[in-house]
Image (cartoon, rainbow over all chains, first blue to last red; front, side, top):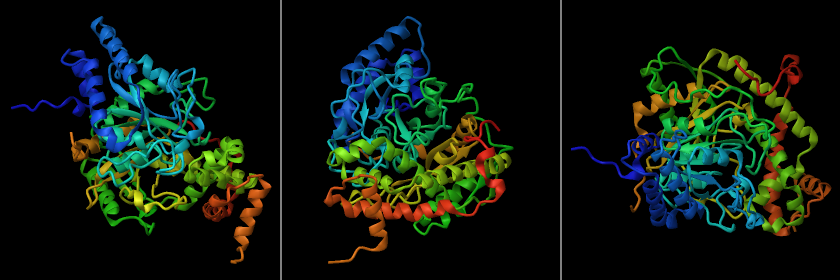
Length: 469
Length: 64
């Protein structure tokens, strides 16, 4: 007997097939998503705004077009959410901050516009760490999102609501942003897939900036295939983002289903094992992943990279200096309008000198050149961990902002390479652990191919959090 | 009364030079964060060979 999947278990690919063969409507998907949000979000706080009327109108339009034979691509009729730093025309965009509670943009961000043109169904705006920095704070106008695997734990950040909503099956796709790991961190802690594309691949126009030269936009999804389908809609040159790359858009799904024979991976094990905080179960999960890749036909070779601390110092100095420049006026005139963590993170930028920033830019060039012209000239991809511990509990955070990060993600913001985060197992406490696949610049198709092969071999994505409905 | 460390005095001087009026309740946490940041920036000034100088390279390095 074939078990019929409940609607919320359908991936984008599966829901897309059902929409096109007429066995489901976009209206049904939207209503199901809204009902699930009603049932679950009171405990998870993933949404800062549910756009119910907009969702139903988008869905009706998507259904009407499909009935007329008009198909606008892989997200046609699919419900999705946006981190609440993406401008949405006529819909409040708060950055989860009391500084922006009344901001209603006149125009869509480029990504929101592309998703609307692709007939996606906007279901809501999602929680974030304030201005995509800070931490899981309780002194903001909205509560922090919680981890569906255990609501006493954080879901990662800063795209916290995006991670929680996808992991809880309230959405199949949510957009996040990633400046030091803010897509890949929530993907890791929530047991889902997150793709930070190559710098310049997806437009940031209309997305509130954190760091002009480190910000990336990308999707969080339940499967690698769904990430590829989303990229097909959102990627492409935008003259409105000065750093948008005028590169051809590939078929992101082209490599899905191919085996890994002939590919070679660098495995910089010391990159994370040298960190005394790295949990043994994270190291074991990565070693097991490396063995899986070898079983799948890839050649896996241990390599050494420059110390993680060098990448982190470089990325952190750039991030904080650029973020301080963006927020300087408000930090000086309205300091108490910020959450405590956000203020302390951002205001620290005041102590950096111009020379610090220039030294960081010089080092970035050196690190990016080393990674791309040496390491990735020899290897098709690098495999490494995403986080070094399981998702922390909320009560591990003190009144003032704490340590920098338990993520190993910022190196690839520094270098601009595409990095795919995906589940790699579970901790003894039943919380997700994750890995990263890092590829050559603008070679997302290979990264997605590798991720899909690993996903099919391990099936970690089939695990679901134990929720009330 | 505890005397401020040289690092603490340096941070407070830098904040003042930047013209940032810090609410007293937020200062201790900010100073810790800034101190950690400054310790890390020391790593940015490591030795570099002429070959590693970036002026002849571009970033991001496009195409492979």
